[in-house]
Image (tube, rainbow, N blue to C red):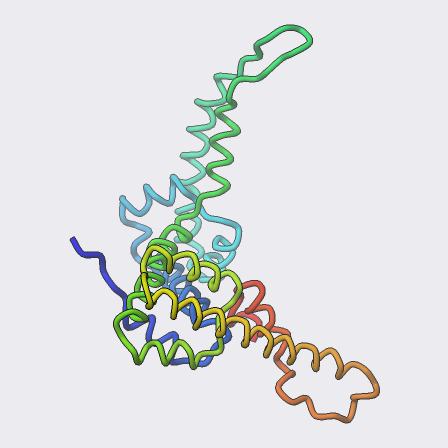
Amino acid sequence: MKEKLYTIPVNDAFATPCECPVCKMKKTLETDAIDYTMGPSYMEDDIREETNRLGFCSKHVKMLYGNQNRLGLALMLKTHMDKTIEDLTALSENSPKVKGSLFKKSVESNSVKDYVDTLDSSCFVCNRIENTFNRYLITLLHLYKTDRSFQDKLNASKGLCTTHYSMLYNLAATNLSGDTLTKFYSDINKLYLENMKRVRDDLDWFISKFDYRFANEPWKNSKDALPRAITKTNSIVNELQ
């Protein structure tokens, strides 16, 4: 079955001024995922099974707490804790065996540590975001290949953050080819570097404004340079502006 393309959210993201439209797409997905998790879905057996197994990362559990559905979050965390206690009770009964000589010992794989490491790196909300976000990136490349107006929209944007520039650069190799791939690399390199320099220059002037010699000079485009620079370098959008 042909995989779904998400042309509307991709086009919408590039229609709104932003230092990284890909960050904007991901932020929208994150907001939707939080709303979905805290909506009626948390009472569904299959969803609860997933939240019990995966839990939530630190970032997203804070966002879930801020959603104000405290009862829903409490129910999910309670059954997640039930499963964690049950699993670790069973695993902890089998302590790792030490083998080898007195002076050279090695410990067999620690199932408790493996379990907790896996738990620490899993998140129901992250999973829900990533599955759709990856399709957004594929859709972006598909639009670049098939829609000249989207090429123009991409090139007219304010560029990308470093992380999403790299992701698209690497993903293009398996989704584009020939002259289209060559043109995409040329466009995205120019788009990224020119806009990074633009924000860097705004940030430089923002710094200069703290020097008494420039106190009476205009701010130009530098008043919001710091949050825009953080978008470019750390893929954080909206929260700081």
